[in-house]
Length: 185
Image (cartoon, rainbow, N blue to C red; front, side, top):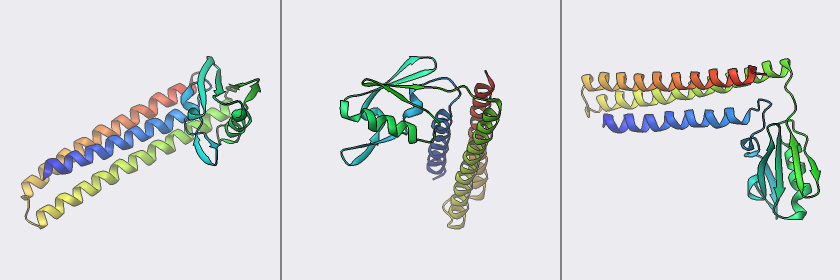
């Protein structure tokens, strides 16, 4: 019983940490990487699909992403989707290749991005704490239903707290890495 609760709690906390990692990867730092365009959606024959399913996404150099649509008629749609996404990018089509240069980040923009990163991390911390609360509630219910003893509940609560501390430390480490990355010129 306690092992099941602990296992599901750890899975949920790991998903939260992974989600933060992907969210932080979307916040750009001035350097180009293909993951920036992962959440950009393009209309393709009436349905929205990720841009990497209709175009080959590559790095041209350290500050430029290249997108080459598989079909010529998709060049304008891919360019428009990249321009309209919330990343502040300005793509330029050259034949069938779309060049997406990464603009330099100003000091003010860096500080704004750090605020966003801290907000994302705080949301992840809250999610981890909510998972802890749910697990502790399950343990209390199990004691109430006489499925486990109070000693087992205390042991389980301690284990869940250790898991929580571990994942909060992981989230803080991710935050520190991203802040350092944003402040590096």
